[in-house]
Image 1 (cartoon, rainbow, N blue to C red):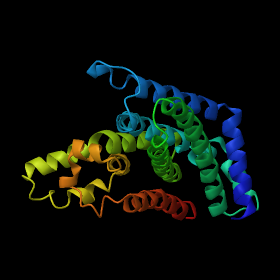
Image 2 (image 1 turned 30 degrees about the vertical axis):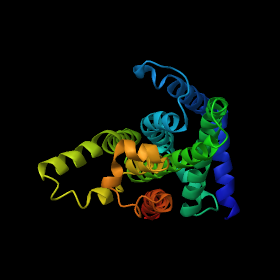
Image 3 (image 1 turned 90 degrees about the vertical axis):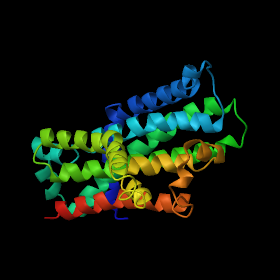
Image 4 (image 1 turned 90 degrees about the horizontal axis):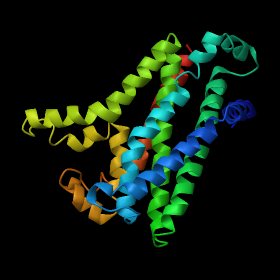
Length: 270
């Protein structure tokens, strides 16, 4: 990788450290992860860490809402904010290409998100797993990696929005729309289509339509690991085992990371 990219990434990362963004998000992740894990079974009349599968499932419910929102907030004004402040022209006057500038900014933001996620969920996980067997670490590390992938997906989407938006107000509106679409609305639309068609239209395509939502891919990545959760959710009747492979789902997530970023690079070069 070219050194200008690393220089820009380092500056972006130091800026986030200086304004305490990393500290704030790390504390948010750690506090919510520990709270949800410890009190996740309170509605069933018990508190405390309930075991690997139940703990991860509780954390998945948190991550699907929180991580995409934080990633979108982190990246939505990456380019359009510089343009409004008048600093984008100054950056483009430096001896760096537009691709190097965009990749450097994305790498810096991705590093910020990665550090906050690893420290936040890692600290909470350390406390949680003191009450669980050592084998639980394998599943918890998998959960943390998939969480990071989910954050990188929405960070790529946020950077693409930032490149295409006319101003910060429009970019923030588009970011909110993306969050509502993928986190709250998409599954309802999919289930509605399935019910309206009696399963004839959407039934065979249902697993593939779920892959079009990175939040669903993240959920399936963490459901299909432990066998008892697989039985609990009954998704094996809908999802072919080959398609539910962690390698396939991981590749889909990487595709979700790269596609919006490539779109942003293409648009930024225009």
